[in-house]
Length: 265
Image 1 (cartoon, rainbow, N blue to C red):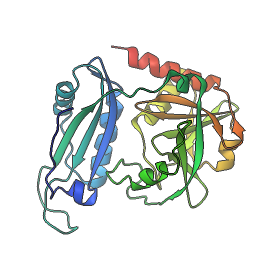
Image 2 (image 1 turned 135 degrees about the horizontal axis):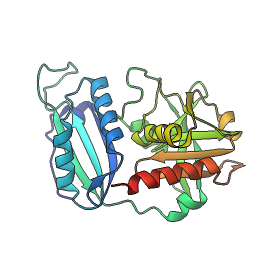
Image 3 (image 1 turned 90 degrees about the vertical axis):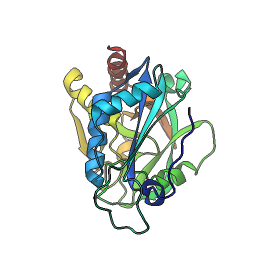
């Protein structure tokens, strides 16, 4: 990856005044691009940031990732002076960077992952809920709660006892064939893979994925739990505390649908 510099006065660095999205590129093709761009647009609109032109972004992704890579797109409000006030005008700043493909062991997707309940409690801010802003300190601190290599992810909740997300993933629970994912209207990040999975379940499997408040008891009582993001695809959850699960039919169906879509030209 080529080195680059960010001006000290960039508001993304100074205030976290920006957004980012992370995606997989396979053989020069950005996977699930339509949902990634939709979410990037939505996040920019939430923060009132300049929205990058889609064709320009596609060209920049092809330039930095002509083969296979993980690409991170960062959009900030750009350089401005001191103070919180949003400056008039300005075209913002954009970074499109390529990173090596993540080397996750296949057993994680095959057999499931061990997750833990994080002690950190997510704050609620409906104005920013859903957006993947540059302020991810809650996730950073939550991820620092464990160092055991056997634990693949931590689940985060809010002060009202609702499960919101993983430190790097979205959460789905299945009970008696019904699929639910947490309501992210107060906190959390709406992932592109989350939205893709909801769409795939409805269109390809005829299964409605409900968005609702989910409690820790709902997770414990689920028949299946799985996690999604754009790098891991879908991971079955094998254990959380004393609770144990085996990868179930809905999780396997979701994995197959993602694989089919990623393999399509």
